Structures are given as structure tokens and as C-alpha cells.
Length: 328
Image (tube, rainbow, N blue to C red):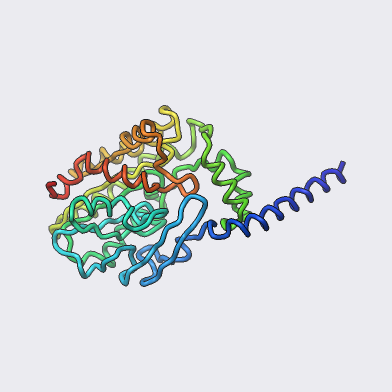
């Protein structure tokens, strides 16, 4: 029995090895490249004046970082008093799409108002604020548009780091461990992850972490409120735009409500402080269902080109132009 098992295990390893060899020969230009590592970030800005091209099975896009350390085609010294600074994480940075395809650049094209991309991949609210205070507060601008990703931008009361909403990876723990072992440049990794993300997954409605504790919601609300009040003292405007998680698309309505509950509670907290909040989550779900086009990439779970277009349009539909003072 042991001999049979050993032969079987060896055959699997040999098969994977051959698959990797031939697959890499054919797909080497379509493997993932780690945008966070390759571009570098200290949480406040990327390494200035670097560029790269990033690939996987779904996307191929180019990135150029300006002299300020941000992904924008101008420098902050060019901003005027009517322009806006956009703070956020990888959705604001624009993972997966070229610069002109990012949602805020589509808004810029529509309004004619400069929306400076200060998004830094893999950061959260406390870093958005520090980024602004350290690098951007002295630049000319009318206000700040902060994008808030509903999955992991909540801030923990217990540490300066984010409070993570549980990930569907929990339901495929051993598969996920295999992917981590193989590494992101593995052909098997990319094939398995693409297939895994493209299927409907069973979700436990009691998912731990899906319902963010109220203390973390209130703490995040307090941080954002304090930032907004500080901006107001300096004559700057502030808008918060919610970026919905792809789980809101994949899950059934009862399960989806677990994620919405936390966002709704924070939105109510912010609105009670007279902060302008735009949340297109519900209409984004409707667009996915009705138009039958993917709003998110399967592998990286960021907005696709179509998702960026829809998100920009939903922000306009829900009054972003009125909030920014642009009439068009």
C-alpha cells in the first residue's frame, strides 16, 4: 500500500513539474508580477520615477510612478485650487488597468476637474490620512475624495493596522496553502486560482469577521470624521466614496447583508457628522446581474475595465458632481 501511495505521489509531482515546464515556456509573459513589491511602497508613496508592466491570465497593464511617488501623469505642483486629491488603496491606485481606465480618471475626463491619484496599494484609512498629512496637505486643491474599500479598510481599535473582514479563502484552506507553497509565478498557481475564483463558492452565513464589531466601525468613523474636520478648518472639502467588495456580487442576498450591515452602520455614523458619503454598492450589484459583465477580475479581485466604468458612472448617478461643485 505504501509503495502504491509513493508511486502515486511521485507521479503527481512529475506531472506538475512537466506542466510547469511546458506551461512556463508558453505562458511566461502572462504570469503575475507583484505590483506592491516591484514598485515599492512605504505606505505613504511609491518609489518615485519607476515604471513596470504587469501580467497575469486576465490582465496586462502598464504603471508609471511620477516624481511625487504616485501613479499620475502630472505632479502635485501642477494642481490648482479647483482640483481634488484622491486617497485610497489599490482600487484607487488602479490595479489591473491602464491609468486612463481607472475610475477617477474617467471622472476627470467627464468633469474636466483634475483628480490627482494619491492611491497607494495595500494601505488603509490611517495610512490614507498620514499620506495626506505628510505629502499632500500643502498642495493646491479644493478637497479630498477618499475611497473606502468595504472589505478591509476598517481600522482596528487594538492596533494601527486594518481590521480584516474574513476572506473566502477560509473555505478552501488547503487549496490556498497549496497556492502559497507554489508561489505566484507558478503556472499551476495561476491556473488553479483563476478556476477557483471563477466558480460560485458556498458561504457560511455565520462567517467570522463578516460582521465588523461596532467598536471598530465607530473607531474608523472617528478617524475619518477627525480628518474631515481638520480639512474643513483649512477650507477643504471632503467626500467618502464606498468601493464595494466583490463578495457583494458573489454572495446570496442573505449572506451579502452581513457585509452591507457594517458599511451601513459606518455610513450612518459619518452622515450623522454631516460628512458626504456615496455608496453605489446596491446599484453595482444590479449592474453585474443585469448586464452580465464581470465588474471584477477573477484572480486579483480588483475592478475590471468595465467595473471601473460602471463605478465611475454610479458615482455620477449618485451625485458626485454636485458634491464636488461641478455642474455638467
